[in-house]
Amino acid sequence: MNATKRIVLIGPPGCGKGTQAKRIEDATGMVQLSTGDMLRAAVAAASPIGLKAKAVMEAGQLVSDDIIIGMVAERIKAPDCAKGFILDGFPRSIPQAEALSKMLADNKQPMNGAIEIRVPDQFIVERITGRFTCAKCGAGYHDKFQKPAKDGVCDKCGASDFSRRKDDNEETVRTRLSAYHEVTSPIVGFYDRAGILKVVDGTQGIDDVTKSIMKVLAEL
Image (cartoon, rainbow, N blue to C red):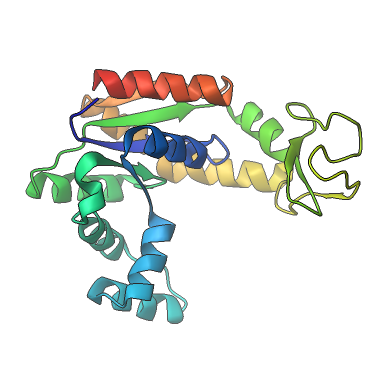
């Protein structure tokens, strides 16, 4: 896979976008672009767009689509993006998707593909609400999918104190999923109409999801 690829990774919270984007980056040299990371880097670098974003955030307001698109435009000019990039968690709405497509087209760098990691809501709820970590070393576990070898004892450090994130509860997860379906999931149709949507089964094991994504990339 030598040709430069520019892709968007789409999927609900908890579907594994971040994990898969990192794996693609490691396997291909494509750069994982997270808007959160870009925002922090732009602010730290005190670039013009970063200063604008900082002023907006310090005023307690949401960073506008124009600023986000400006950051993406600035970031993809960096040398490390020459091998391609994976947009992780962006765009989040139809207006953002439209603005991104226009910006890339203007730069003669059209998007090659949009990969949706498709996972049913109930699977996401079960995946997130079952997560817990070792309070001492941070090792991750799951009530169903990844239990400690010995009940109540961390495999890595032997500690017996575990914790769960307060927001890893069903009510919060379903609220986040509802927001995703209302605002973000319409971009699936946007990229389908553009003829570049590919769908991967996100209920598979992590390694199998990675294999499926790599197969899609090879065919783009």
